[in-house]
Image (cartoon, rainbow, N blue to C red; front, side):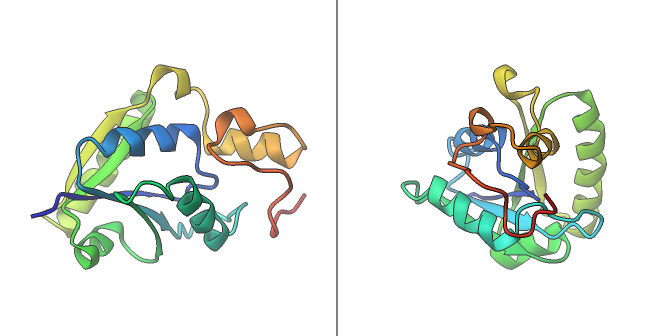
Length: 159
């Protein structure tokens, strides 16, 4: 049986840290689905379909990695796609506290779902999507933080 993992997140935008977790996860799993969820408590900077296309381009040469947008509970989405694992990256202890709570809730909804944590590579731990959005919103260069080319504001940006 294939070992399928979901790497869920808003990926707004997808960062070099996310890329690193997926690359390392490919050593552990047969397939990784980068699952872009719809977080009802966040408004997006980059449209979901735009980010799906961008991430597909990043992994175009890696058949182990798929990208899919989804709505609803991550644990339910895992059942739909036959994934038994959630892949998550941890930058620090604050991330662990947050992710541990989510892992417990996911396990309650889907008892067959196991969460696997990878510690972020030290050189990538200081950056996050919020910082990248803020730098980009004000015209700063974010190319060192993302694995794709980004030249202009996204189509739905307030800037």
